[in-house]
Each structure stands twice: as C-alpha cells, then as structure tokens.
Length: 98
Image 1: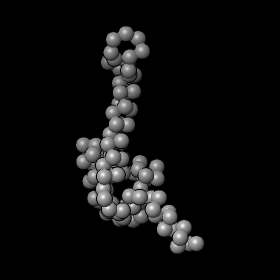
Image 2: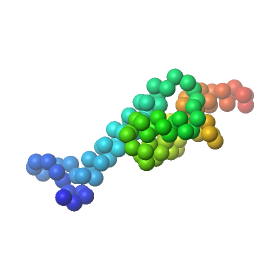
Image 3: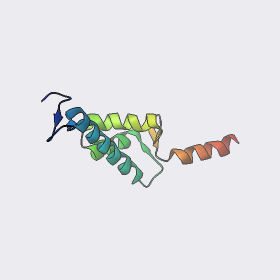
Image 4: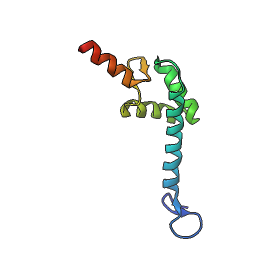
C-alpha cells in the first residue's frame, strides 16, 4: 500500500496519510486535555514535556506537541517556566503595564 493509497472498501477510502493526520490530531487533543487538567498556573518546562509525552504516548511527538502548543499560544514558555493559562498572564501584564 502506498502512502496516499486509499484503504477501506469502495472509492473515497481514507488514505494512509489522512489516517496519520487524524491520529496526530487526536493525540494533540489528548495533550491539550491533559494540560487543561493541571491545576497550577505554571510548571517547569521539563514537567510540561513529560505531560505531553505521557498524553500522546511517544517521546518525540511529546516534545513536538510541546512546541506546537507554545507556538499556537495554548501555553506561554518563558525559559524554564511554562504558563498554562496564557489569558491570565496577559491580564496580569495589562494591569502591570497599565
């Protein structure tokens, strides 16, 4: 079976590439859910990566998803600290800057 060859019965089957995208999307949603379950407002970067790895079940993807969440603005990574509630950080920043 080739990378983009459809599988399943009939025409319009799902390609392997599409199936991988769907699995990746589900894993990313699992990571987002795991991060939202954390009660504190911030954790160390090492803890954050561990949460991501545990949620997706894969070390390399966990590291990748940690970066994805930072770039997407789901979290804010500043040095070794990960702020899990970016909206609260920005609210504090607006109050501080005034």
